[in-house]
Image (cartoon, one colour):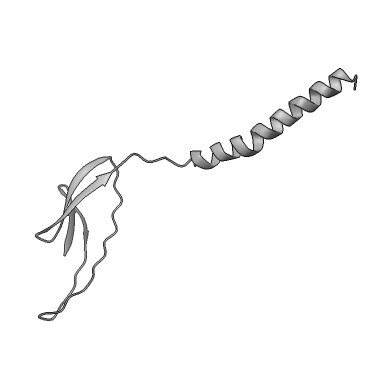
Length: 90
């Protein structure tokens, strides 16, 4: 059986089944470009693969949380303490 994504043969696996036998088959495929691609297994259509934008290697959500909940409060507290130290002459 072949997995075909768009116009590309993405993977091929060989299986032998008896008459009336069924089996789950898994393929792995890594898309290189965004877009929508028709998918078929052998001669049977298996739907459409939609590939969206990747966030890349930097976990922006985690970095944003660290900034908002750790760095920003520490910077504000430091600013307040520094202002008090200057006010009291330390």
